[in-house]
Amino acid sequence: MSAQTQFSGGFRNAPLDAAHAFRAAMTVMSRPGEIRELTGAVPPEPLSVAAGTLLLTLCDPETGIYLACEIDTAEVRQWLAFHTGAPFVTAAEADFAVGRWGALVPLDAYRIGTPEYPDRSATLIVECDALAQSGAVLRGPGIRDSARLSLPDIPVMQANAALYPLGCDFFLTGGTQVAALPRSTQIIAEG
Amino acid sequence: MSEYNFAYLDEQTKRMIRRAILKGLAVPGYQVPFASREMPMPYGWGTGGVQVSAATLTPDDTFKVIDQGADDTTNAVSIRKFFENTAGVATTEETEKATVIQTRHRIPEAPLTEEQILVYQVPIPEPLRFLEPRETETRKMHALEEYGLMHVKLYEDISQHGAISTAYAYPVRVADRYVMDPSPIPKFDNPKMEMAAIQLFGAGREQRIYALPPYTKVVSLDFEDHPFEPTKADHPCDLCAAEDSYLDEVIMDDAGSRMFVCSDTDYCRARREAGHVGRMGREDA
Image (cartoon, rainbow over all chains, first blue to last red; front, side):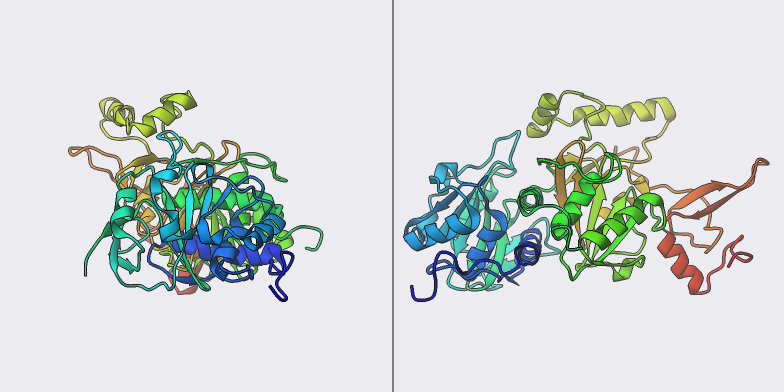
């Protein structure tokens, strides 16, 4: 772990770094298919810069984090504990879940909200190798006509969108890039 | 500026508000509860909008505040000064130059772009509240999409007045799901809500945040035989001669004379600078 310790790699100027990071996160969540740069934090491997920045921007002692499989290392736990103070919880209790797609599924492990309070659902941060504006066709709020985004699993995400207004929301992270897929987006599998 | 954290609120509060904004964007039109803070201004002066703006602003932003369309009213001036002091952001009165616009009860006349964010101050976020006072019941009505009561209210307007007389805070249906209160904007502004900018709504006293992503389908409720009509005073602006802008009526004296002026002061100013002159625009130009 050479120079990287649990104390390093946080925001240099927390209010400003978090403000810029949130604007990127809000932009992609309100415009599915958009890909933005998201930097500011330098998390330990295997957490990506975008995922680490997102967690520092949104998590604190009030939000439970679930670390899926290979993300769940001692270094990541210590780093998140020091910089966010967030408790680590099971998938069923998580406000935020982080991991690669294969480790996060099945989605029925997560909270999808209740009919009265659909906001009480988990947000999944899916670590991807790369993001691209290709693949599945997206339509719905935030999209003028249609958009395209490389999704890890179209049928499972379609099933999640079918639960609307319940369901999980997704951030897709790869390196320093972030995209998002809210539950309101209709997904059309098409070549 | 160094006496305050950036944009006044502490970081944990901003994170809580930011999480609520993200859920609001994911479920357009749904009211997300949030732990609204005491702000250094009274409830009803835009505490909800101020908290949403504080969580949204970055130092690179240019901020504009309007109150009923005007940049120079007490509420607008004091909120603009508040963020000049606590966030150090640039401010402007020109709609085109702003990146974040906080508004009370109007949408600017100039079309907003994808680079802009519109933050509404909302007094009563629940469109069903005057029909059903219990929060437990209105929650259930939203969950079950039970919006018949709202149509009954609009129908009663027609049966009493011959037309839908609701003129502001006209209810809309968002993305074919939630009925939403657009805040007390005139119904003239309702068709503008399908816009390129992100729209965020903050209700401080009622502790609710909701949102509309760009290009979200927003339909004003109506009936086939009584379609929705955006209305305005049937006059041109007396200062800039605009036919297409929403007008305020100003009583001039006790003999019944009156003038109509653009409610959007920046739109009116820009038109007068471009040489448009209305009926009474000459002498004070």
